[in-house]
Length: 429
Image 1 (cartoon, one colour):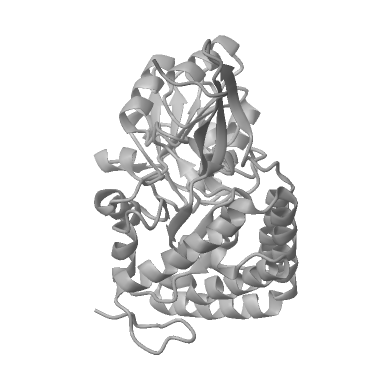
Image 2 (cartoon, rainbow, N blue to C red; image 1 turned 135 degrees about the vertical axis):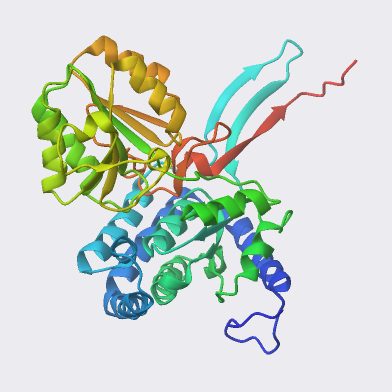
């Protein structure tokens, strides 16, 4: 199989494996340049990239309009189109996020710990870049800039493979970003975008051990499941965001109502959106919370006790408790106290983000301790599950595993470490 869209200057078709090998070689060479430049130059490059994104606004929005038109013709859902759509305000947000990353402290070279051994050896554990990071994502063009900024700031090169839905947007954003890098003396190959939508290239990236150092998938459950099943390269990912908001008996009714509506309806298509609402049987204002969600346009699917609260709630089946809707739909259940809520979350949460609304501090502390998710919240909307909201700048994704990084993965999560040992001539006896 050959690649169906060749990079500029190519004269012969390449197999997916050959294409990935060539791009990886170029990226690794660029990463070696990044490894020896200073913090100030990387920050300058990111500020230049943000300026280029703003300067290229007409071209980027025109490219995005092509993607939106194609998506509408394909019948993409409203949630998918919302993820895909750019306007002047969203593009400004993308550029601003790049500048925020530029302003963050550079983690590379920071000393995690230092110690001295009795024999006089001095040991340091120091943060270093991971290397070349492959990022496979779907319909969000902002990921192109976010991933590029985070990888560059943390000293990594990036090989991006975006989805076909955003192909024009991704290329326009990457082109602007490359202008910024080159103006600051950094090779454009530090941030590369795979020049084809051939799906075989994804397989070639997943098996490029020794060429790509880590894969980060950003997209739907089927994409992430495939990456986790097929990769021969380390993967940093979450499978889905089945997030719960538990309204405890001691919750403030106004706070509960506002948080529930925001957690579901602010943006329904993001991974931090609430998918299941748990209502304590002793909470006196469940009807108000349910009505607020229904009146906001959310379809609710509930158990028998939830349906007794409001006749507009549809019956839930067993699959609803394990579904990431990414739409204006939520499941709702009534539970008998904190222990029942914890049991439900343990059985059905994907380990992404779970929240409690309560005025009881002891209950809140138990929830924080006993819920085993990457992000656990008290009296806050799950929509805050975002690297920018955590003060991390942009994020590369939310990791729900237990190794290396967990929660919003930003600069520190894109580094590893090495041991530096300094001696004065010691030989081991």
